[in-house]
Image 1 (tube, helix red, strand yellow):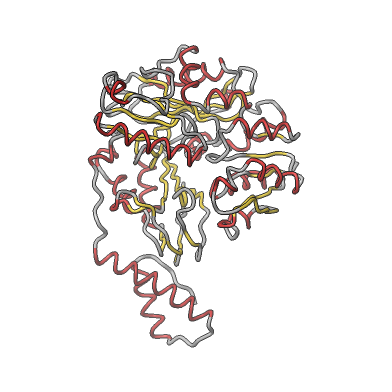
Image 2: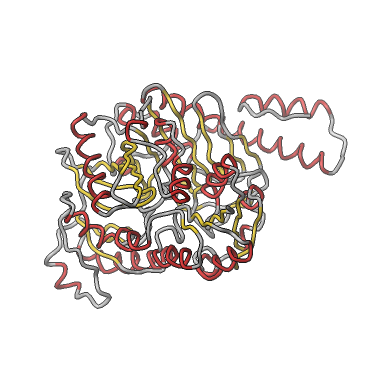
Length: 496
């Protein structure tokens, strides 16, 4: 078996790591912009699939399939994003005689489209948010529509996930512009501009359930995750299990997810997502028929390698676990490190990583694609890496993650590291009083000037010595010692 990963970045490396443990050779695909990316170096083989533009490379089905045939791959894993929820891609992979490590194409067609997923959920007896299960036509009469809409309202892409193609219209006057923005974003991200309206649940909690199905109606559940800390409808911090739920609520939401998966005879990994209102009533919103960005928190509390189980199922057609094998221990929290500036409304940032020091220690996991000297652009998603902390309970997981984020040093561009630390340190977060509007009333503060200056000096020191060493110039020992002293204050170790 030879597995091609039709993706990039940290998820590609994540999949490759499991393959390496299983003894499965891997193939990386890359666009012109990713020629020197870490995932191309980590794989056993790498092959180009086109220009930087995603539509001409990572979203180009013929290019990916041609690469798989040329490299003689026998299976393809889509990761998340890009083609991961595209039924045409899954069908083309199977028609080419390769194993598609994901749901059946017909299941993806139903669940990859949020409107048809709503219909399927209703049939399975799940509570669904009110609203029509019909898309907005491009010729929709906004004046007439406005009389039938309660504001604020969400305009959502029917395809894809990851928070892309979701916009909020607070008034009737905003609706026209918001519809166009959501449609354009959805078309660019997923190649499908279909959108629909969904009522906004105020102060909702976003809770999801991880499932794994064998395709014959048997569904394993791996507990729930809390994903309520979001910006622009994209998740920022996730944790497992969700706090402040009763045992009855956990069992109820898990049973609903299992019932939907069983009704559809779902195959492979998937996530059933819900919103829970202030009265603890939960509503189905969508299914992500793929591996999720936040899957590590589930792995940390169950000890199960989800990618491993997904691959084994795809190859053998059978589940290697039973529900009784899945036990929960402790709590885990994941923070997404983004190349974005929270002080500028999360505007994407660019630059070269001049210094990098990733955290470690007990209970810490880092899923990353970063290396020193790497150039960060805006060509793709802003996700740089993920830091996951496990603890015996939620409080200890928070403390470990706080420590890890303070250890994390990325020089050369602005990230959300400071914001993430401030969220974890806030009283509402620590007591579990969180919802999807948490960041609406949360304002990050600037670094203390002295701390920022010391950190910048330390990073400059590391870069200075690195360049001097490369040019084989002599460095005055007193100068080195001075830089070391400054660097030590920020726990950056500069070696000889």
